[in-house]
Length: 143
Ligand code: C2G
Image: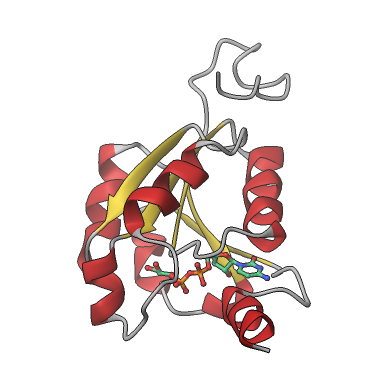
């Protein structure tokens, strides 16, 4: 059951504000959770697009956890209201319109990379959680 949004837009009878974000979310960790939590502190409804394994191959990435499990892990996070598949770079504009997103939000390692979307909605970069990353976890596990 999605998290009850903070009092405000809904209590004021306004449509819920929607934010959308994108990622691989491999070895789901606190950095991902913090990003989702911070987004839900500002917007009522969070849509998360999870990169498919095929799209990750295009990005030159190979995740330890397969797509089917990564999207279920994201769905299981109480801050996430809807999880969809990310199949290519070009779908963002379509998704923003389809879900009526007021904000496109990423961690600040993506600063300035999606400014072209500013014609459609707010483009927001939030500070990354320092000291944790999927790559770092993989290196740690490999020892
Ligand atoms: N993130 C974070 N703190 C960390 C690690 C990641 O806030 N310690 C954020 C990233 O900034 C990003 C999101 O978590 O917004 C997902 O990160 P990745 O899974 O590494 O996403 P990536 O593979 O870079 O895919 O179309 C955009 C791509 O799908 C982004």
